[in-house]
Image (cartoon, rainbow, N blue to C red; front, side, top):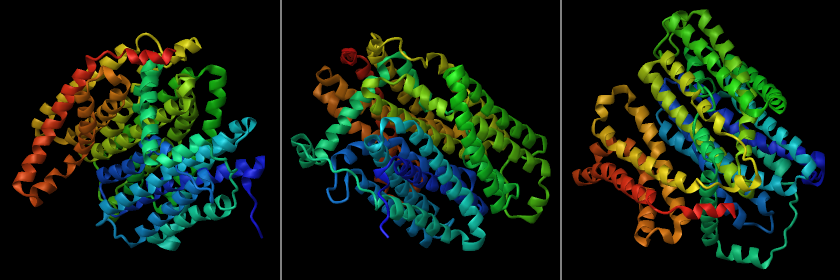
Length: 579
């Protein structure tokens, strides 16, 4: 029996994108809930689990870089986007199958690396699916289709998280990788393979693009960087949106590794963790719909302000209960004596706070996305909005990292308190997240050039502040790892600013300055490897170790100097966005 081409009818298209988004949610739920839970049972510490969850979200922060590749390289035989979806889903399944041969927790670094590769393909798949949706969905289908996409992703997370935990008692942990891979391949075989994507006849322009290959893709990424740079700095609202996206979307601890860690320590078995995640996911999905309706009647900023405040309440409640019962630092898992000492009130508080948190988070989920749309320049909507979403994923990644470190350094109550307070930081930017009054104003205002100079100056100061921190890092004690996470974010932003800024400045920047930015940006990104400096000290020759230590000081110092030079340039070219 021949399977139907779901792209050929309205109901088929809606069903297809529901299942395609399920394949995006399944790996996320699997890693953040099922795998994180099992790692904690194996005795892996909260900091390592936090870094593991962060690595899983990291590729989504850079998914915009895949767009040019997917646009340029196409297959006549399998279809343009369909070929990418098939290829990425096969690689997602293959990388999961490889994990069955690894031994945990001994091979956790390799395990994390392979899942990082897996999720890179998942992020590429997301770009291809969104591109396909933009090309095949009719205008009157897009609203319902987007709702079904988010619903599919939520169901996928429940399957990968709760579903896998329910099955683990029957199939074991290692076999669960095969189950998740088979779920993805089922969508490949039943949904993607029968698709018939409309053939787009090649024009002279598209043929030239295909012929230039990677060179054209690099040019597309250059254009993306320039458009995003101009869009972010063009208006007050768009500029505020950059920092708003980089800040946590309210308190986040009960949606990341902290909740999984605590569930295991408090004695919840796999089925109980699965039910908790299932109830939370369903409650959050219902709340998303309610939040959208409320925002239409009461206003987005008003609803989102209330939702952001509400996310801190269950976090503070759980903090209070843990502090009251003296449950501060992470404890050994699996010990009968430790489990016997856990008061039932702690388990009840975890359930209540987790479900309440997911309801409040769900209420503001779609509203936050709509707010980014408000401040987006319609002329570069795809570029700017995708970048906002990427920055939001970067915020999830660094939040998961610092919380894992903070749990081991400060304990659960202080980490929860810090999360509740830091989650409110975005409220300071809420008044600035306004839609421009006119179309002309939305394209860019007269202050764009000043914003660019001030950004360069601020990043320069942050790079300079790295030097005293690294010199006296031992004095920061348990906070050292958290400061390191902050500076990693600074280096990433500074590198992206250099690469995009040099293109926008054009002839206004000297050739030597432009070349210096190109060479230094990768070195700034490579500073992430400083975390392996201790390993290098025991295995590398003294000369190589001295070189590495010198670069740790020299690269941020040179970056600060270059950013200061960029701050002094004439950024008037940004005003071209107004024309």
